[in-house]
Image (cartoon, rainbow, N blue to C red; front, side, top):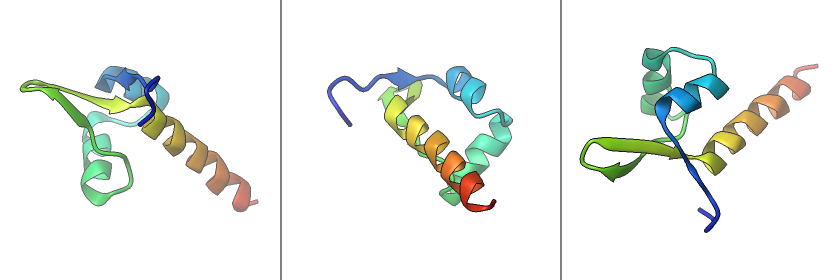
Length: 66
């Protein structure tokens, strides 16, 4: 994580990766999506850099399929 890395809460993540909450958590469980970072007892978020890498990997996978 870089010092300038920010955190995204679940609604922000799901606006970037358009899947349902259930699909997102299933993807975390299976290792397809990055795990959340606990910021407090009831607060979790995702590193923006992890989500950016995930989006970039989607682009790389789609271009390699053509």
